[in-house]
Picture 1 (cartoon, protein in one colour):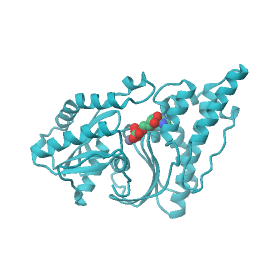
Picture 2 (cartoon, protein in one colour):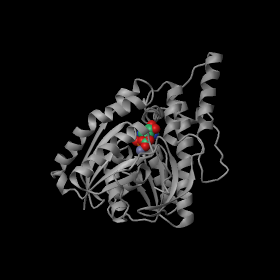
Picture 3 (tube, helix red, strand yellow):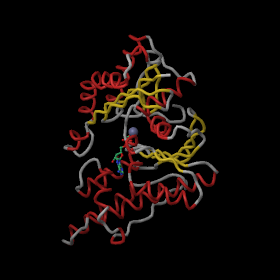
Picture 4 (cartoon, protein in one colour):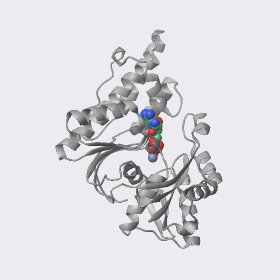
Amino acid sequence: MIILGIETSCDETAAAVVEDGRHIMSNVVASQVNEHSVYGGIVPEIASRRHVENISQVTEAAITDAGITLSQADAVAVTYTPGLIGALLTGVGFAKGLAYSSKKPLVPVHHLRGHIASLYLGYPSLTPPFICFVVSGGHSHLVEVKSHTEFKVLGRAVDDAAGEAFDKTARALGLGYPGGPAIESAAKTGNRENYSLPVPHTENPLDVSFSGLKTSVISIINRAAANGTELSKSDIAAAFQHRVVEMLADRLIFVAKERGLPAALCGGVAANTALRDRAEQLAEDNNVKLYLSGRGLCGDNAAMIASAGYYELIAGNTAELTLNAYASRDIETG
Ligand code: KG4
Ligand code: ZN
């Protein structure tokens, strides 16, 4: 079955064609990141406008690259939640038009279910159940993936999401946007032992909390400014990254081991090498099988949406042309 996927929830306009949820026939992403980086973060109005400008060409390119015509697709899958509402509406409206004109089913996809499905593209034999940490710019969800379309959230970020914490901390350090890659790169030459950051605590041991770390970094910056002392951005970046990575990797492998299930990592933050390395080491030490989203599929893309869309379609989850977009909706209800 061939699915055309469309993704416009944030700052990437993306379209892709995927066969049977596993094989990528095409994957086109038009990123707006350079434009938004000037402002130090995403400007929703600009994101919506660029999606409107790019969506036709990106979709056309995905269909052409796949070597098919729209009539050969079995369904149109689209991210309808969560995300920036104006951005989501562009993709949803466009997908509705395509589904209507080509008389194909319209499949609504939850963006985080899409991130999880990115794993099926890299590992053809991976099937649920498994424990997955979805770590993106807006969410940090520790999820029990019960089936391709059934999810239970075991823990989540009680304040800033992991990616958000990287972005805000990088901004405080003047390292630019997006913060994840900027902190990762600065941390490479840093010594984390030179700054002591607190280990965050959460009431539910499976939740995560990052805003205290960000506040500690801001305090260090302010103190150095007040005292006129030199600040090592790379040392702070290394200390911050270590605490975040520790919290994510340790919880993931602990829960997977406890439940006797494989572990997985996906979402934009899963591109972080320190996180991948620590998770791999812990998985090996604890005899847990670990699946990592391919580096090229960690960030937002439509191949993951087409993959998730395939599983939603075969589960009978299609939408009417009255489908709306939602800024926020739980992954469990979809
Ligand atoms: O999944 P994603 O592309 O978009 C959302 O669904 O939010 O995630 C974007 C987030 C940003 O916060 C970005 O700073 C973070 O992923 N990110 C990283 C890295 N690459 C991207 N965080 C840490 N290390 C990275 N290498
Ligand atoms: Zn995402």
